[in-house]
Length: 167
Image (cartoon, rainbow, N blue to C red; front, side, top):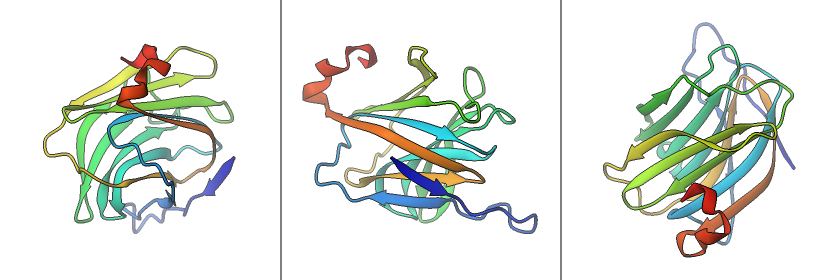
């Protein structure tokens, strides 16, 4: 399990960047399926970073705590955060409960799935790629929360039959 404790936000700087952990994986899956479980202790957000080139260029799937109850898909370009899609229905994690976050990436779309403890995955965001990053790593991020992450699974699209519920 990986535990990340994020920076706290100050009222004078609400745009303070999240705490990011870049995963140094041999096999990176930018066109496939990634699934991870998480548990958070605060009301900020947890994020799965995909096609992560660096802190200033990547996609971020952010799941917020129960106070905001939303999910955002952002594309960070040269350090500027651009919201691509937002969902406020069926989103929002519950503190101290395990949740599952999954993403399916193709050349044409990014599909985000979310489940609260023990429930089935539901599609919460579908985004048709504009100009996707072609490379990058996977990362995890938190903001105003402490979170634990476990059971990360990655499947290239040609092995996607291992997770037929996302196809």
